[in-house]
Image 1: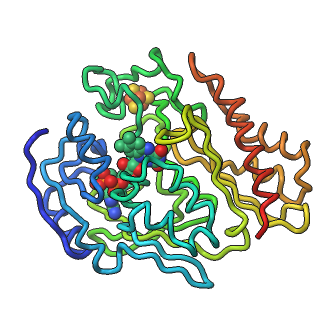
Image 2: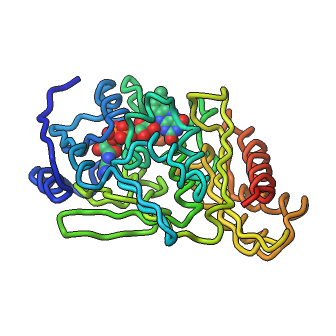
Length: 342
Ligand SMILES: Cc1cc2nc3c(=O)[nH]c(=O)nc-3n(C[C@H](O)[C@H](O)[C@H](O)COP(=O)(O)OP(=O)(O)OC[C@H]3O[C@@H](n4cnc5c(N)ncnc54)[C@H](O)[C@@H]3O)c2cc1C
Ligand code: SF4
């Protein structure tokens, strides 16, 4: 690992100030950013050890957890999750499991218990892709790591790569699980930066690769995620995360679906669907939602939703199976969510 300067911040404002002391250009690849925040370190340190990320300075934000930002607050109005809450704490919280099951399930099905004990939910949503060509610097072609260099995955082994939201420049899959659950519950993300505090719909946080795959989110350089907020919407309790993978534990998704339904008998009043494992970003499947809204959730509606979800999919040499798998994952998740007792 290359040498770096280590600093520790006790408040969000102090962290932003420390990050802001090194000039950063807004169009730098996120891997080239000279300052990185350190939360659980389970992704950042991996990336530094394999020499993909090379920060000059690392700002440790863990002490901020002591000032409420490692907290979980649930009320009748909704939920506030501090960005430094650990994945395991959120996954195992009784109110989260009961009132926002898709959130607890998405975290329980991610990584391993040891990683979940260490990793923060803020770091989770910003984890980098597992594309092997991105993670192996002996491959010169990777537009995400080195803009303009090409994409080794296009002509390489692309079984794990995305079929939705791809571009000519990058087909890497967004690897996380929790982000899809946040989208299914219309979550918002709270952000602190050099110009103060702002919040945005979580679904807007990640950017599709287009011709700038190195620009992964809409965070400005040095901005810190402080929290996630989720309103107690009518579809929060009837929500579910289904994850299909090569093995049943400690593995990333081949296809996943986060589903939340507000039902009037067997009619869908309102639906939220987000897909994982198949797309370049946490993927809101709005067309699929539209197919079932106001309808009885019968086999015909399920099939229409699945078709709509993958209508714009584009396959590569080794990942055509993801369309059939993604459709089956979605229809099963919808069926099981509709059948939930709430
Ligand atoms: C073997 C293995 C298997 C895994 N399997 C899964 C899986 O199945 N599903 C899944 O979802 N994840 C999986 N993960 C990923 C794991 O969940 C992430 O590594 C973890 O969530 C990252 O959180 P962290 O707190 O350790 O982040 P860090 O490593 O500390 O940070 C990650 C990035 O986020 C930035 N960052 C962190 N916090 C903030 C903040 N508050 N504001 C702004 N920037 C911030 C850091 O600067 C860094 O760039 C796996 C990881 C490993 C190693
Ligand atoms: S898919 Fe994206 S991350 Fe993977 S090699 Fe191509 S440009 Fe790099």
